[in-house]
Amino acid sequence: MILTLPADAGEPMSAVLVADAEVRHHKFPASTRQIALRNTGTNTLWISLDERNFFDVAVGTSWDDRVCVSGFWYCTQIGATEFAVIGLALMGSPEGEG
Amino acid sequence: MFSHYPKIVSNVVLAWVQPPPPDVAPKEGRPNFIGRPFSALNRFKAPIGPGAVVVGYHDAQPFTRFYGTVFADRALEVTIAFSNDDVDSDGGVVDDNNISTLHYDGEALKQFYDPQKQGPTGKFFCTIYGRFIRVEIKNTGEAPTKELRVYVRGSVF
Image 1 (tube, chains in turn orange, cyan):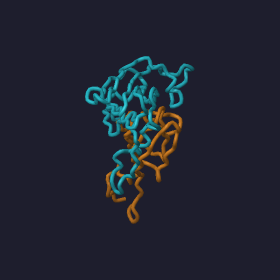
Image 2 (tube, chains in turn orange, green):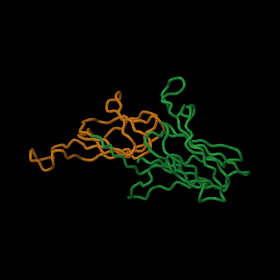
Image 3 (cartoon, one colour):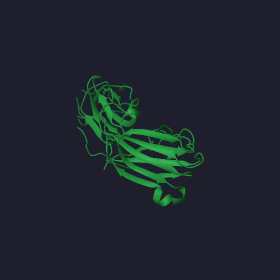
Image 4 (tube, chains in turn orange, green):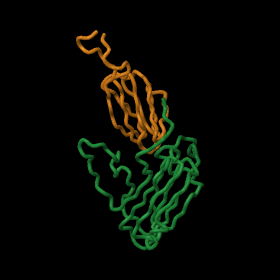
């Protein structure tokens, strides 16, 4: 396959979401190769990649990692908080290449 | 990878604005600069009558200091207090339903707002003394509020 893009490139899948006390699931249109998110609100954001283990993203901070998932779960302990997320889709081989 | 250097765009922790401004949709093709509609942040529900009190709660943990301004056509007593309870009296985790039942033992500020002295009484600043913040507004005037603007903002530095 002729490599025409950086190895870590991918189609962006962006969303702006609001988390509150209810645990919600965000499903990406395709599996990711990387996720980056930023807590732009005023409450701590709790994120889980497996619906069981949650970690926190403090107000005004971001989190990113190279993970292959179809979605994630999110909530807050108190109140609501907005956050922006960008998932990078796994790149497929362009037709005619490879 | 985590970024531990916080910088926030939205920092309105609590707000009471009377009359409430209408929500206006973001312009097409432009960023949503204010995030959630202001009506989602505005705690104002009805004019505060003489002697009546309104209260708001918020997690204080994300911030190091709180600041804001007060304006009203009536005299107000604004009290900011903090709780250091990590759990409620039954040992349960603090959430939106029980945050009002915590012990707010740390009074950080009591401000007597005088509409005739907007300059000296219309602003405040306090540090953080606890895990959760409570802001209480009491109308100490003799008539219901017609205009009210109380903003409490949090600073992460």
